[in-house]
Length: 165
Image 1: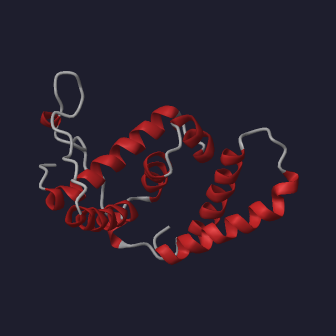
Image 2: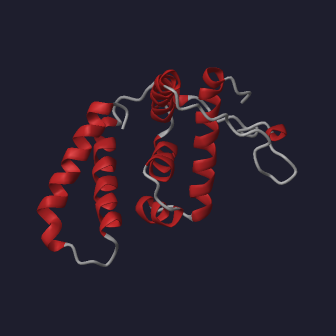
């Protein structure tokens, strides 16, 4: 969702639907998958309603080049330099909270499909199989959307954490 208020409304609608429909849950999937499918359906319905206003940032053309500079990867195709971890002292915790706000803003600025995949995979912690099922995506498409979303978020956070995107 494009705003926290709309996201909160979708979550409230989802919980109401879960409570009302719990008696009809047949157990053909896990309870978590059933709840997330309700959430995804509510979010899609709301997104259709909200689609009348489109921010200019989502209209920008996709770049044709690689999403991340290939030099950032080692010979093993893994990141050559992963992001630094923040320490656990109070000052660093405050910085981590600020970074979390920037992270959520960067995720919120993503196109809808990328935002949905990264939110379910990295924020909610769902496995890729469940994300593919919930969003009706092929495994390859889900990986591409997740890679692009992570690359954009990493690029958005690079100036803040001092990392070369």
